[in-house]
Amino acid sequence: MTYCVGMLMDAGLVLMSDTRTNSGVDNISTFRKMNHWEVPGERIVALMSSGNLATTQAVVSKLEERTKAPSERHNCVLEAPTMFQIASIVGKALRETIAERDQSNGLQASGTFSATLILAGQIKGMEPRLFLIYPEGNFIEATPDTPFFQIGETKYGRPILIRGYDPAMSFEDAIKLLMVSFDSTLKANLSVGMPLDLLVIERDRLEPTLETRITATDPWYRVISASWSDSLRAALDGLPDFPMQTRQSKA
Amino acid sequence: MTYCVGMLMDAGLVLMSDTRTNSGVDNISTFRKMNHWEVPGERIVALMSSGNLATTQAVVSKLEERTKAPSERHNCVLEAPTMFQIASIVGKALRETIAERDQSNGLQASGTFSATLILAGQIKGMEPRLFLIYPEGNFIEATPDTPFFQIGETKYGRPILIRGYDPAMSFEDAIKLLMVSFDSTLKANLSVGMPLDLLVIERDRLEPTLETRITATDPWYRVISASWSDSLRAALDGLPDFPMQTRQSKA
Image 1: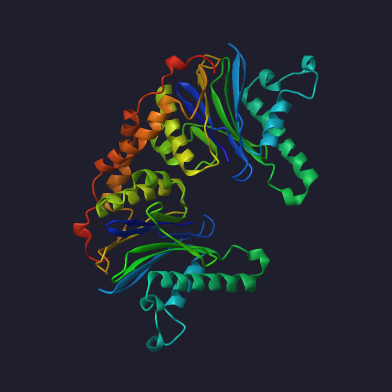
Image 2 (image 1 turned 30 degrees about the horizontal axis):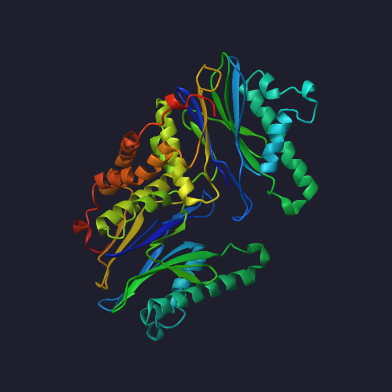
């Protein structure tokens, strides 16, 4: 499994992804699921992936034209004029990669090679944009109604995102919100694992404001993880009790 | 879908279940998923169900021997000497019901008629006990390490249960915790719906302490649902910010 979240805010974009890949529960590895490409001052484009690792690595290789000699490569992500066109190109590469694997492995393997992507970025003179790209190659874009996308193990960490998200929040608050969402998921699903990759893309800066990895021993992470239980219990304590006395009668 | 939780605490047992059943998203109904039987002063036994409604209703009918004339019925749930034996009987009835449907519908329907149950109760002179019964008819019992069971749409509401559960909590606190867990699930999955059924089984009382239905217009529910977002945001605010300034360098 995997857990990745991309969040579109007034201030820009924040992306977080875990690094665990697994085949069963007895074969786990650490792989980066977040890639980004930049032309400083002109564009920054980031991609996060969930699903079959061979598929998502192949998609990235195709985008970078790694089948060609280094001097002949044209990374279309760095050249397409709009984020929408990049989403189309990435979607097409994803669809083709999955179709090739499916074709050569027959019906039995249907679904095995599937993958889903989150694409985020900004090109100079245009807005920061966030897309969810499906295995079928089509995609949807984040809007004020649905300003964040999750892929992989999305459910455990979703309620806090729904409650905590605010488009006007600072990057610090957004990272804290994502950290709590990831911590809930890490505690519930063994196939989501530390360390986490974090990328902050500030509006109109057109290069990463922050790119870092949060490890299991990170002092800030340990404080968040340890104190969130207490914070939640305190929040629960603050809610009104169920009026048991007035409801004693059987319904 | 469905969401049911059974929780074993020092004070006794608390059960909560939603009432929505659906076939697709355009055919939804309200059905009670919680049943209980009692011999006041001697035993109380409750059953919650998720999965195929025809299956779970058939299991309850079998337990109550509704195929027989009313005067000849013996409800085994009211007669078995231990909760463990009741769990065995219920598991067997569940397994048989699913197998009958599967058999008469062939391989294509495999899984369609499946269901999972939570069994809770106490018999005089013995401890309150809580079981999770699988479609295969086998079951596990709650222990101090795993003191609550969820069935149906379990993921959205799980993180708060993990964080908030305390065996020494009062019934009021337990109901509040369940309410928040259900509210997170209700907000995320349309196939879980109000009203909610609530049953409180106090240790050694051997009859329901509280049996009630919480509707969407319940004033207490509305306060919890409305104020939980604010409580969570305040809890997030109380956590330390991510030290962005000291992490500005690229990893």
